[in-house]
Image (tube, rainbow, N blue to C red; front, side, top):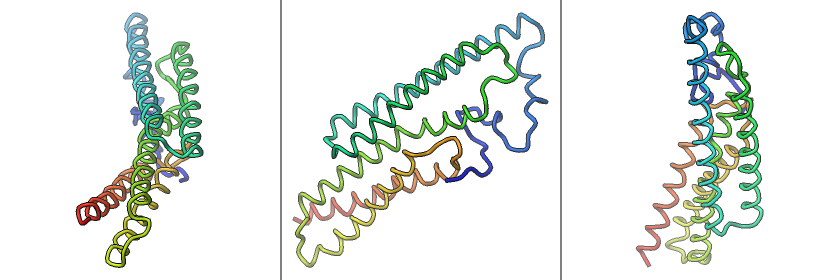
Length: 207
């Protein structure tokens, strides 16, 4: 997913709008004297630190969900590694935020974009957990389906395999990714999982 028109990153969209000379508009947001500028800078830091901590909490929650999902070791390792790296990066980002001295250029554009990629890790990890659990149910209960159920099982597998591919791709985003496309893919991934789950429930009720 290469970047194309990155207008959203880190929840502070105006800072990454293509074609906009943000240096011209940031003067209106940084204060009009030393006291107001200093106060706004500290409030800015508080806001960004709180946002980073919220992302950290989401990552830790996704990790805990992965721990209880009894995933395959390779999948579990993949999720843990991504979360571990994201948590380390966020701690470094918080240090960078605390050391900022100027409101006009709060963070680098690549930092905002990396942050957006990190924010998508929890939902991508949780999507992989969901697809893994649905696949497990299909394997455990419908590995040898009778002829009447065979097409429904195959359809369910196609939906869940498509969802899994989407969520694994989302887990590997970086600052160069197209986040608009990523958001569309995330919705598509969950829709595919819902379709697979609906087929699974139909099969279970038919037993």
